[in-house]
Amino acid sequence: MGNQDPKNQAGTPEDILKEYATEDLIVYWKPKLCAHPGFCWKGLPQVFNPRKRPWVDMQAASPEEIINTINTCPTGALTYALPEGSKVDPQKAQGPGWVNYRKGEPAITRIKMLKNGPLMVEGPTEIYDTERKLIKQYHQFALCRCGFSSNKPFCDGAHIRQGWKD
Image (cartoon, rainbow, N blue to C red; front, side, top):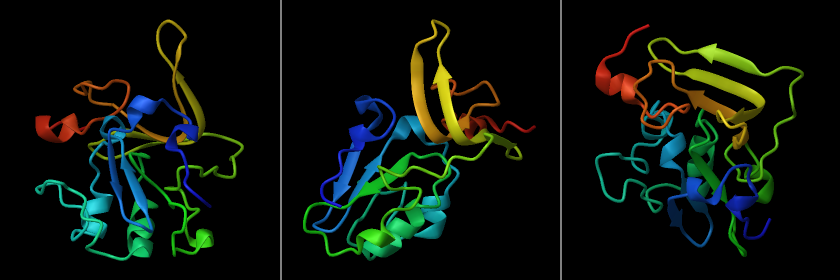
C-alpha cells in the first residue's frame, strides 16, 4: 500500500489539519468535515477522547482496532493510510476510512435525515458554491440542516450546542 497521500482523496489539502502517526498507521482528522456524531469516541474511547489533547492516542489500541473504528465514521472527517513498511495487512485497511477508498458507486445518491441532526449524504456527490466552484467531491458528507453551522454547507455539530430539534 505504501505511503498514501491524502491529497489524492477528493477534496482540498486544507481539509487535513491534524495528522497522528505510528510506524504502522497514519490517521488524518479534518475538523471542517466533522459533525461530531461520536462514532469514534463511543467506539474506541481509549483512542478518541475529545476531552484530551491530543485527542487521538494512537498507542491506546491496535492499528486494526483504530482502522475498524474509523471505517464507521459517517462524515469522512477521520481517514487513515498505511505508511511504507507497515505491519498491517493491506487488505484489512481498504475500508470506507481509507484515504484512497472508492466505494462501489451506487446507482443513486442517498440522503438520510438524522433525528435532530444533519443530512447524511451517501454516494458519489459533488458540492458547488454559488459561483459554481467545486467545494468538495466525495462519497459521504454530513450537511447542515439546522442553519447554525459555521462551516456551511457542512455540519459542524452546532445543532448539538444550540439544542436544535427537528
